[in-house]
Figure 1 (tube, rainbow, N blue to C red):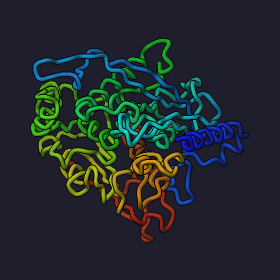
Figure 2 (spheres, rainbow, N blue to C red):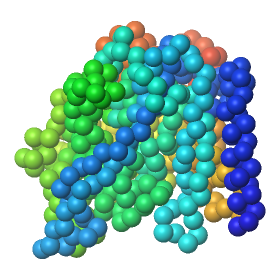
Figure 3 (cartoon, helix red, strand yellow):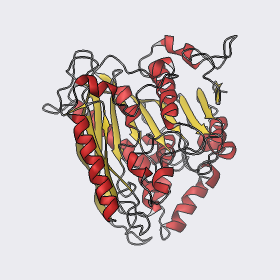
Length: 432
């Protein structure tokens, strides 16, 4: 343990030195989301400098499913911490480095103790927003189980630099720090996303909030990874199956609280929000477990981009993400597949601390893929998500060319360098 502490102290000192580099040195430091030489065209950052702020929210009077019984419902005020990235009132392309503080490990696990670490991003903390070109479309990001709001900074920063307000949620009882019973994640994912959407809309109209006039909640997209994908697909219209509600009840002492998110439930149907214009679902969990049926998937009526590894052993591929893609018959939808990749098609690359000898291998495998370079996956995700949201949140038709599944006579998609589409498949289906 002493060696681990020394290693962590050394890595912290190294990062402190990085923060004191000149702006040229900062630009030469590889940060998650920076471009590899084979990065596709739209992976590049946009014209805006990026600001970032942390907010603490409180979702009042929610079901405390971890302490409730079938005949004894406990309620609590549910805390949610969010991170907000946005166009900043700074010179475009500012090379400032911000330090993100996260942890690896799994709360309560004797084999995976919580280990703090830091990593750099290209943003400036608590800087004034740039209102000149706003309000900007809103993007809400939901991490996996377990995870954190910092799991996809390569993408959140990138989108903010392109003129979006990006909000990433720490889902209480589902993060590395506070992982708890899985039934909390099953119940709260969609509820957290809807609450955050409403709160950002409220802040956008509230004098004194830095978000006032900044975020256009009427043009919102959702991005979810794994259990985040499970939640955002439900918010997008795919009501859970009755079988999913029964499974939840068995896990939760007979609770029927998930029924309000089941297909056909009046409360669920009333919650479908026209402000949500598009969804990106990375490796969404649940299809293999019967979470959705044919009727539920048909409820997705907004454009959706699915992203998956063909060898996903957590969410499944043929009977998982691809089956959701096939079943969402009323959606204009895309499926981007990383051939031979497993589940980790969304997160940042593994932190340096995960490479320390003696750590549980899952600290590394929480991020890494054994076939793909995560930096490469990050760049490809930046490219396709930029095109997809540009079409559906900014109504910029020129992005459609980048989503054309037909390759040119040299075997390339638009925006890709020669010989760099190997290992990738892109499918598209229009609503039936």
